[in-house]
Each structure stands twice: as C-alpha cells, then as structure tokens.
Length: 174
Ligand SMILES: Cc1cc2nc3c(=O)[nH]c(=O)nc-3n(C[C@H](O)[C@H](O)[C@H](O)COP(=O)(O)O)c2cc1C
Image 1 (cartoon, protein in one colour):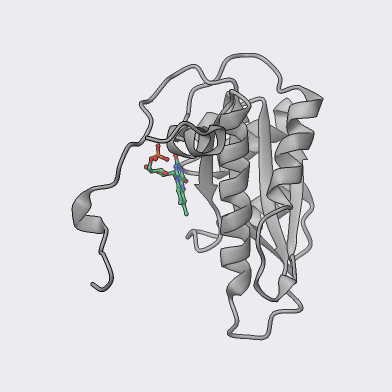
Image 2 (cartoon, rainbow, N blue to C red):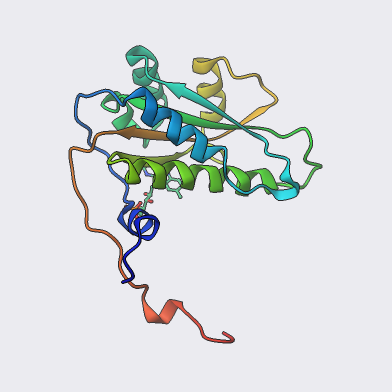
C-alpha cells in the first residue's frame, strides 16, 4: 500500500469501544471539530451543529440512554452530531449524508491523532432515542440528532483495513 498519512489514518480507523481514563487535549478536540465542519455538504447548506460533551455525568446519562452506547460511561469525550434541517425541503434528506461525511471526518481525525472512537447511530433509532438525547442535552425539537461519536485514548487495538475484497470492486462496469 502507498505510504501516505491520510491513507494510513483512513485504513487504521476502527470502532474502539474501550478507553483509558485520560482526557482528550483541547487542541485535539479543536482539530476534530475543525475536520468535522470541513465535510462536503449537498448544496453547501452545511446543516451540522456539534455538541462537545466532556462532563462525566452527562456522558453517563448518554450511556444510559443509548442501548448500544454503553462505552460512553468510559469515554472522556463525546461529539454529538446534529443538523438544522430547515433549508432542506421534505423529502430531501441530504442532511443525513452531510452528517455522515462529518462523522467520518471525526473518526478519521481522531485516528490520526492517536485516539480511538466509535460512531453511535441515533437518527432512525427506535424507542424515542433522538428525543431522549435531545432531553439530556437541551437540543430543540426542530434540530435533528444524527449520531454520537465516543472518543478517547483507546484501551483496545484492532488491525487496520487492507485492500478490499476483489468481489466488491468492479472495473469499468458492474
Ligand atoms: C450508522 C452507524 C451506526 C452505528 N451505531 C453503532 C452503535 O450504536 N454502537 C456501536 O457500538 N457501534 C455502532 N456503529 C459502528 C459499527 O458497528 C462498526 O463500524 C462496524 O461494526 C465495523 O467495524 P469498524 O468500525 O471497526 O470497521 C455504527 C456504525 C454506523 C455506520
């Protein structure tokens, strides 16, 4: 594989769900948020809002609320990715893809900075999960909650990805 720092971070990104008891430095949080907001956006509407959460009680409340987000009771940081969607006309749901791009930037930036992270889906989750997250964080009802990203210094390691399964790549046509 070609030697390149960006390619290395993309391939090394894995879902890390165990973390050291160590805060994430301010400059790393700032870099992660800058990368999040640098994502591409349909019509360049840039609908995203990012809530940085480092308060332990709030992280524990998010952990309690999210059925598959229990690692939030260990992670020192969560970035909650939201979207102000008023510019998007129903049934235009491009904002979901905008937020997906921002989330991926967060994950790759975290990896490049030596941090572990995991994407926790919220939008489309059953049992009123988006409203539960809204209530914990004071998010207004008209703001969509796309996902939570748990971030911290990893306490587990996973191998990087390599070349894709050849059955998944097509040359010229399907
Ligand atoms: C839309 C979406 C929602 C996800 N939600 C969760 C989740 O709620 N909890 C979790 O532990 N992982 C979640 N993941 C992470 C996936 O489980 C993970 O990406 C997948 O198992 C592949 O592993 P990898 O990230 O190490 O490549 C989510 C990923 C995506 C893209």
